[in-house]
Structure formats: structure tokens, C-alpha cells
Image 1 (cartoon, rainbow, N blue to C red):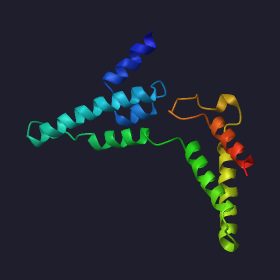
Image 2 (image 1 turned 120 degrees about the vertical axis):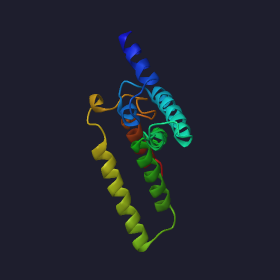
Image 3 (image 1 turned 90 degrees about the horizontal axis):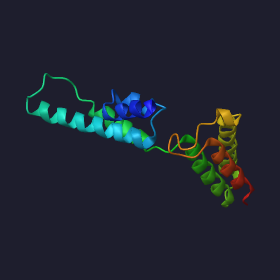
Length: 150
């Protein structure tokens, strides 16, 4: 119950856009709600400033909009999956010589990065939905399935 009050307070009166983004207690929807509140405040301050009604304090509008944009970015595991899938499909095409060698090296390098960045145990994995995307383990399973697909 106390957690809900704290979370609601963070949403209604957020401090800084960066603090909202890194707060593990807030869901993606709650973060977006908090950033919407910050955006509204920043826009009102900007209008007041343009009308000469403020003491010259800077708005955080740029920071808020950047934070909102960063919430829309897919998780890195998803991005790796997309790139790996693209590289595999390019290898299936009729490429030869240096192009094929470079594609194979890039594929091997990215697969190594994905393997090394994958959590070692379930306890290391981020909770599903914490960032709005799939678990890293789910992404790795999907990549493994694609390797089997000729």
C-alpha cells in the first residue's frame, strides 16, 4: 500500500526526467505518465517565459522530450535480433567473395556479443515487461530458433 502512494507521488510530482527513466519502481506506463506531467509543466513555463512572466528559469522541455523518446526505443536484445536476422538473410542471398566473408564475420561477432551479454542465470535476467520488452532469455531463444531455420 505504501509503495502505491510513493509511486503515485513520483508520477504526480516527478523531479527530473532522468530520475523518472531510471526509477525501477515505475512501469513504462507510469514513467510515460510522469513524463507527460513534466512536459506539461515545461510547456507552460515556456509559454510564460515567452510572455515575460517568469524569473528566467530554464525549462526542461528538451530533456523531457528526449526521455519520452528513449522510452520508445526497443530493448537492445530486440535490436540485436533484428540485425542478426538481417545478416542471416543476406547470407542466404547469392553473395560471394569478400562480401560473404565480411557478412560471416559480422554475424559471428554479433552472435558472440549476444551470448556474452545474455544473463548467466534466471536471477540475473531483468523481469519481463520491466522495460516494455521481452526478457533477454526469450530473445536468445528466438535467435537460437532462427539459427535452426535454413
